[in-house]
Amino acid sequence: MTVQTLYLRSENPLLSGVLARLTADGWFYWAVLFYTIMGFAFLIAVGDAGGASHASYVLPAIKGFLLMMPLAALSFDVIRVIVRFDQRRRLAFRRTFSAGRLAALGSGMMMMAGIAVFQGTFTSIKTSLPLIFGGFPYDRLQADIDAWLHFGADPWRTLHAVAGNDAVRLIAEINYGEVWFTVCFGALFFVATSPAADAVRKRYLIMFMIVWIVVGNLLAGTFLSAGPAFYGNVTGDHARFAGLLAFLAQSPLDASVMLSQRYLWLLHENNIQGLGGGISAFPSVHVALVTMNALFVIERSRPWGIAAFAYVGFVLFSSVYLGWHYAIDGYVSIAVVTAAHFGLRRFMTGFRPAVPAYSSGR
Image (cartoon, rainbow, N blue to C red; front, side):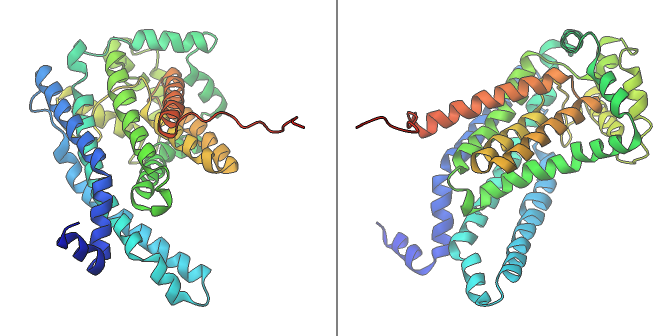
């Protein structure tokens, strides 16, 4: 043990705590670096060496991950102490803002900066996937499978027949955008920055990366499709989903789903890099991420886990209702993420044989 280490541990517990957590998180930074190198290699291989999207994530990451989310977390801690502790509040504040808690927050914020790099690499790869096939070759097949599974009708028709009104459309649009982002990246921020999540932190982060890489890059690139919103653009058949698009066009919101879809198609058509760019429908990363969260939640609480899986169903509904996905995109995401979750949990925790509920021993 060096003199410097002794000094840090004895004189600066906050800094030593940050360094200890960064050291433990070394695997994550190496994984992000390797993924980014492979991402640039992929761009070069498909002839899109200038297609990196990382710059688009710098300002959003600073505002979201390094300013707004830490401020929200600290505000929540302050409010919780004020509400829960009438007496001995000073002691509660000292424990809440201990060196360990602040070290976790500081190292977690650095991890979130790494997440921004990771997301930039993901978008870079996703944007360039159509270059592999020269387009989106699997939309007809996936739409036909979708209809076959749903008794010969495209499932959006059933959903709109039951719930095709302005109120549901508004709720679905808000859910699929702002609510989904807050839930998924809020959960990620909590796991990255809170000591309360230390028991599942590494497994959660590995699963997070699996979702984006396996579901969002590998499977998406293998069975590349654009989704119902862009079906006419990529197949020439504009009639099949014309009713869906006409329904979405009625939205009075300035930030409606149609504007988001036009934004993505503009980026794709002009080969422009942008935040959240890239088009791929199969499988659904939206559904995959909320499924991952639900599986972790139900490990801790059955009631909250049931609520989390209900939310999975609502995101799946929203994805089809708004024309982003075929229903099979969500079904496959749920199956793949569930298999990966239990496989990773067994690998990381080891197989433990079930303990009999009773014994007949004498």
